[in-house]
Image (cartoon, rainbow, N blue to C red; front, side):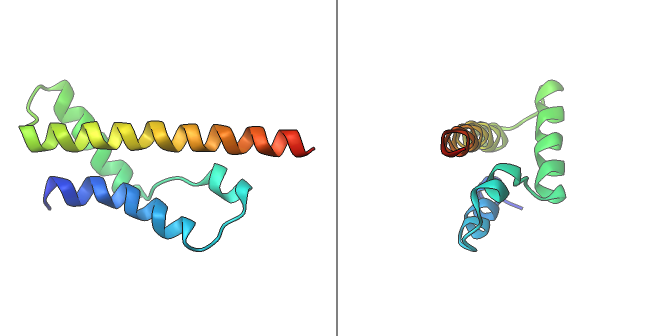
Length: 85
């Protein structure tokens, strides 16, 4: 599978989930599929072994940026929930 398709699938999975109109608590609890997690773990292992090619490194960088965005979104949502209580 091309590198770009895998990094898009993390974002694609989350976008598809958001399109269902989930409540805030469901967004905070959301996690990527086992397949995406396994692929990310494989990229991280290959990075540790210093065997990633350029496209794979770009994919891993994109995944890491997406992870930062998702964590930030979830943190902001949790703050909103706490303020409403």
